[in-house]
Length: 395
Image (cartoon, rainbow, N blue to C red; front, side, top):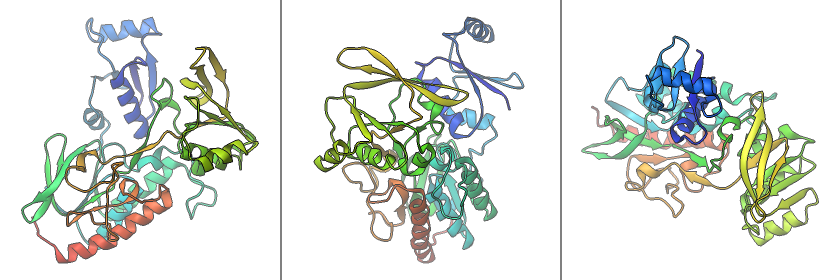
C-alpha cells in the first residue's frame, strides 16, 4: 500500500497520524505542504479550496482528511471491534506482557480479548533490533519479534483489536467491565492492565521520524549497535547519567546535553559522570530539531540557551532519557497507584480491586526490560488462572 501524508511540522493531528502509521509499521511518504507549493495546491484541489490536514492519500486515490486513529485503523484493515461482549479475561495493552499473559490463559481454554490503543507488539515493535532477548543469538528486528508474538497469540485463538482506547474499567454486578472510547462495553471475569509506560519525548521536529533509526530510549537495548561511534544523551537526571555511563562501554565519547545549568541527578551519579573521561557534559543546550537522510537520523540541531546561538552536531545516535510516564490514566480512579501513577499490586499482581490485575511496565516496581516484561506476563497469568478457576461468572 502506497500512502502519502500531507501536513505540516506544527500540526498536532499530523504528528498523531504519523506516529500511528509508524507504530503500525506502515510505510508512508510525508509531504510538508509549507515547503512544497505544488503539494499545497494539490491539497486545495482535493478539498475544493479547503486546507485541512492531515490529508492522507492512498494508492487507490481514496482520501482521509483529519482521520482519527480508529478511522485510519479501519482503512488499514485492522480489527477494531471484538466479536463478543463477554470474555473470561480482557487484557488491556498489546505489548509482550499483555500477549504473553494472553497466550498462557488462552492455552488453558479460556476466552481472551486483547485491546490495544496503538499497535500490537508494543514498544518492542518499533525497536530497531533486539540484541539481548534469549533465543536470538544474532538478534532480531523489533518488528519481526512483535509479529512472531502476535502470530503465536493467534495460534491460541486470542482475539485482538487495536486502535481502541480504553477509558474506564470497574466492577459490573458479578463481573467486571471495560469501556472503550467509542462507548462500547465489554464484560469479563478478570482484567489485566498491561498498558506499559511511555518514554517522555522532546516533541521537536524530526523526533518521531527517526525513533528506532538513530533515536533511542534504551541504552541497554540499542547501545551495542554504536560501538566505536560517538553518541549523545539528552537529559539531566540520574537515569540519563547512568545510561551515559553504560554507553561508554561502546562509544569513545558520550556527550550529555543538559538544557539547564546543572545536572539534576544524584550526587553519586554526578560524581561518576564527572570522573568518566569518555563523558562530556554540555549545559544550557536545547534540542531544536532532528534531521536525517535515507530514513535515518544524521544531524542534531541545538541552541545555546544563553546566547541563542544555534549549532549543528552529527552524532551516530541520540539517546533520550527525560523520564517515563505510566500509561495508567484511565484506571487511576479505580485502582491504587503510587505518586508517579504506576499501579500498585500485591505479590500476586492483583490490584486493590479483586479480579483486576496489573503487570509489566505500568506496575509499580517492575523492571523496564523486555525479558522481565514477558516474565511478568507469565507470572500474572498464573495468578489470573487461579482467580478464574474460582470466579467464573459467565455471560
